[in-house]
Amino acid sequence: MAKLKACRECHFLTTENQCPNCKSTNLSTSFTGIVVILPGRDPHEDPRKTSYIAERLNIDKPGKYALKVR
Image (cartoon, rainbow, N blue to C red; front, side, top):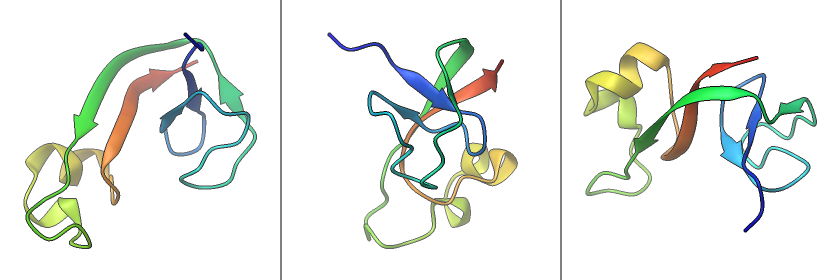
């Protein structure tokens, strides 16, 4: 299994060498905590409208995110 990398810009977790969320290549393998934002009933709806966690972390797309990236 490939090792997860966290984007230092948006905290999105990926196994690729470029963040699929913000297209940054500034990735780190050193991160703590994972939060998963699930899609709502409408897949194109902003999760910040229905999720307190997504609102507090300013996450606008469903996916896996790191809480802290070093």
